Length: 117
Image 1: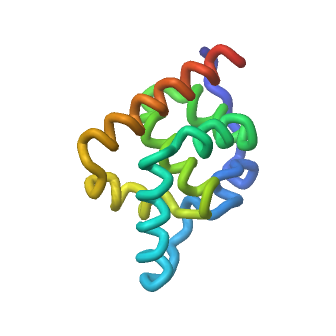
Image 2: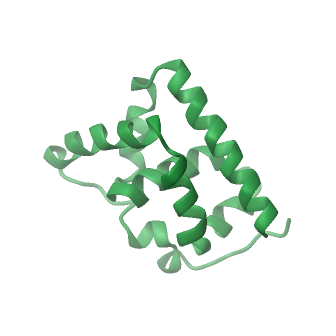
């Protein structure tokens, strides 16, 4: 698959705060919401690939990108405007079973995206 490039200001994840740094007070609430999304990520992940086509194409066509990780981070951002560093910080707070479930769902969504392009 050929790599697709877009300027960062066109990325929907960027426009919705995925790379911002919230204040510490807001971050605690965001952690709880990120855990909520990651425990049941299907709808948010599906929304990312349908509603955010530019950043999805940018990340899914780039070799070496951890697509599952980006998709989980994007799902949390899509659902609640949670920055990626907050999502990364809560990953180990999930049980092994919850992490495995989130990764399996991400694999399903990525395969669905591949069939659509």
